Image (cartoon, rainbow, N blue to C red; front, top):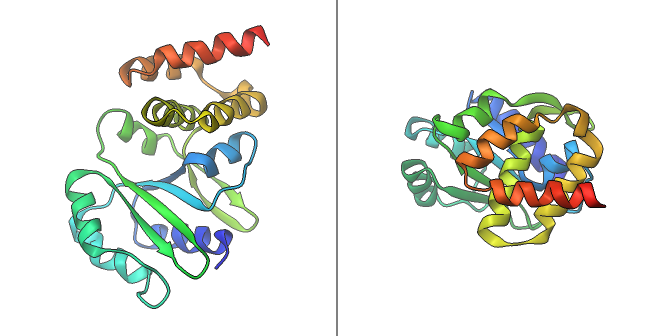
Length: 188
């Protein structure tokens, strides 16, 4: 199963199950900026306990590895879980979110676009992708997130609402990182 096949299965299934979602992470940064190679798809979802059974039914045991117990815990605690296609090594990282604060805003601001050739689905707005990347960078320190942000600003800067990022970055406690990125871009 290619990453494109996995993306199609994921977004079509979430749509059919009426589970609110948005593609985020490196795949989303490639939509708004400069694409880079990835072996996973990151998706934020509002998944409730009553939807777990149908969700698990999408990813059959004979093709995918998933842990129902991990999904139940993730739903209960608003944490991530993943679904892996062992034959290809491709996976989907699902981040279960609530509907308050920035997490709720992310889903209300999502945009339906063509994610890949022939695959239409929801992606986080470029500002929310940047905010997610700032958070990932704060938590893990990987420069790939900074490169992704720079790529978004290079390609999609004219549509990026910097005031929204400023407000949310302060609340998420990543404003200093955001300011450093902007200072670096201005001086280059």
